Image 1 (cartoon, rainbow, N blue to C red):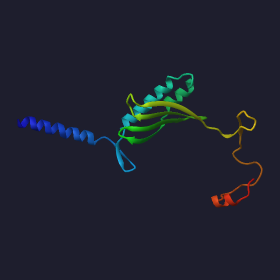
Image 2 (cartoon, helix red, strand yellow; image 1 turned 180 degrees about the horizontal axis):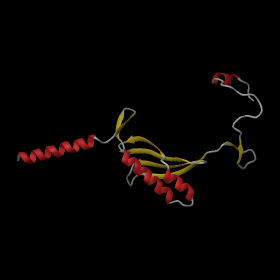
Image 3 (cartoon, rainbow, N blue to C red; image 1 turned 90 degrees about the vertical axis):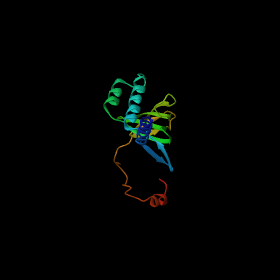
Image 4 (cartoon, helix red, strand yellow; image 1 turned 180 degrees about the vertical axis):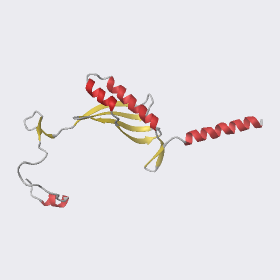
Length: 159
């Protein structure tokens, strides 16, 4: 009888230690169970697999870059292992993001991919069709605006 009690106490202690080792995060005063670093790596693997499944959207050269570089991972929790996670690769002319929502690493999470173009210039819509106007890094004419404060900029006349 004592042996069974000791075994039950040992199992309970082990379970509490195992559960107590799970990472947590505090958001707005509430503490939630977070993903482990290994599980975050699993999100990255799932993101890479999602991009590989869309060969029309992602070219071979881009896939190689995604395989060879580590992405930025940002997770905002709103429940235990539940939240919004973004896995983002910054490439030369765009950012490729895979976003996960809901209960992370379950069948209930929603997966979405999107791309944000990085332009070095201004997109001009004045003629109806978007045209990228490249801007030089330094102005060739005019004066240097200097380091004006927000107050100075608000007081200056419109140009």
